[in-house]
Image (cartoon, rainbow, N blue to C red; front, side, top):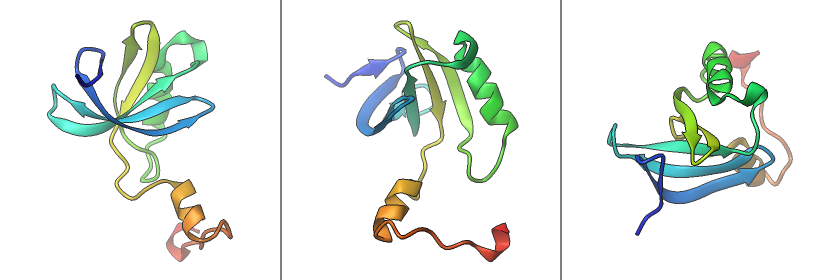
Length: 107
C-alpha cells in the first residue's frame, strides 16, 4: 500500500535528499494533482508556515509556488508545485559540471 502523508499526499517517488530534508513527488488526493512535498529536518522558529510565508513573499519564476505547509506526525512539511524541467543539479550534470550559460534576459 502506498505511503500517505498528512492523510492526503500519496507518495509516488523520492525526488531528492539534502541538508534540509527529503523531497517527494506526491499525488494530492484533495486537489487531484501531482505536487512536491518536502519533509523538513528543521525550520526557522518551529513553524512551517513561517518558511512558506517567506517563500511566498519571494515570488519569482525560479521559486516554486507554495501550496501548503503543516506538520505530519510531528514532522514539518511544505508542499509546492512540482518542477517540470529538472533541477539545477540535473542541468549542471548535463554540462559535465562545467557551469550554466547566463541568459541575456536575466542580467
